[in-house]
Length: 196
Image (cartoon, rainbow, N blue to C red; front, side):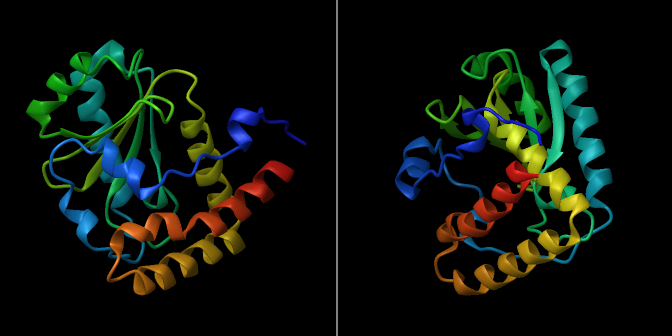
């Protein structure tokens, strides 16, 4: 059995108030509604195109870049937004990456130094959410564990898919509650990951 440190196994649940406090400028348009689409086989290609643009622009600042989130799991319905985890030497040093990404259409929308140094940028079309982390942040490790588990465990992938579709309907008038509403199922899947 793999042993994970407490920093990996204890997942942090943010609150709507914390999210609002970290907001920089206007929220992305897609935050005003939750739309869960069937899996689209073009999502991995969109990620590869995004990855190439990021690494081309940032060069040696890129320590790691990964396709995460539901669009990274074949067969999983998802919001049609490519989630990317980008690790840079210092996510607090926004001047090293935000101005470089602006010509590609990215804008900073979240600044959450209290959450492992997280920054989030969105593409001009709001179809890429770029999560920027410093080295050693536990959240990107959890994202990879979750992605890989769902790729290899169809029953949990289907459980998560059903939960996403149900909650998208239940939170239609409160789209800000959608992500937090998934926590119970996500935590149950993480418990199986960490016990495996």
